[in-house]
Image (cartoon, rainbow, N blue to C red):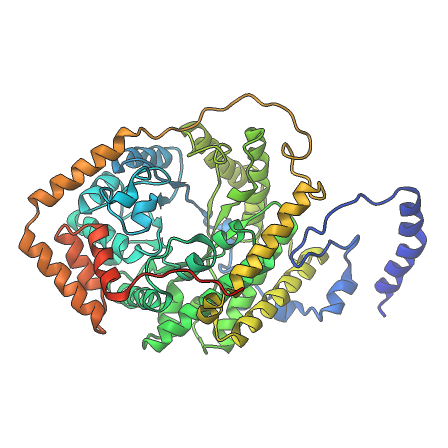
Length: 554
């Protein structure tokens, strides 16, 4: 036993114990992943217990194992991309919001699509009624994409598109419009989420069964490697897994396991891990527990480096370096006393920056009530700017490295995630685990336990079950219901004036590729250039590959 361990044991017995006998410790629910509580004190003996080796476990920034960050100087050189997620109503309205945010200092675009676009349904589809433009922008065709991107400097800013089942279609629309404006494919920078596996686990906006969906993902990897080399072809998302109720370890584990499945599928399709691995990125949630969240991001980098090297033999350091976008936690925002959400978002944003994110979206304080107003979206962006320019945290690389608590939790989360991944391996990999309902059940269990803790007031949420008071209402964005009819009319006009023979021929070639083994992306691009709609292209693939119906083993 080390000298410090002896000192700590003596302190617990002679100092902490008598003190807590007179002043009982504050009752609290276990607030760490795995339903554990923080220790009353962390010290060097915690690091000794885990065999912590700074050279092996920390290293230096920009080099494996990347615990301390993927760039040598991190935010001391270039700040993270401030990429506010936005989109609502029509392409014209969303374009106006993007122009406004760029004028206010935003440094990257992030597009939110409405549910019909996400599900591959055109705005005039009967199943789209009441949803057009509601939770994002409605994009049916190349004409909508032209309006959405009008006047935006596509050769200067990177664009993230939160889209999954129809990701390949929206990417092709983006490329087609960029080329019309004279921007070469190899100049385009951005990310498509394209993470279909988490849709089966947590979110539900899937179309096709998992295995053909994976083919579409790997076709996108291959096509972008050749044609759009600066584009990140997937953003493997723990975010939505956490929003569905997962704890920090589950978010980390299931996102990494999804990543393993994508890498396996790409290698099976003949792709080189050192080439496509450099185009992978991750998307994480950031919750209120500042220390645990920082540890989660550090553990993610270290674990992914080990996975790419040991499982897949990746030699390229760029392929092994986990880059990630972060978004503050929508699930933590409250409709009660909504202005208090500014404090929550600030804590979460600090965790993201101290954890080494490459880009960040800060939620607006009114998002528990509706789409952000311009005022609320501006405050969200200003929160990032204050952290960047006034807090001083961007001047340090991995400022909390060496903290006994941070290092202990980093290793703890890495080990918890490894146990989940081992179980997924035993079930036959992530696709098989999803088909058996394993990650879904684990998330449901965590979500249920979390809600019970709130209802029993074991977990306090300001304004919800503690410090409750009436608060004045805040303005809420309302989407004009007339936009749906206007969008449908634009779509009908497009169909009436396009070249029917070119349109039919392009869809026929796409169907042939989908039934065979050719990469479908070139045919999707031809189809969007022939004014085929998102729904029409998705329907060709539906007819060919079928639709997924969720069935969960009990």
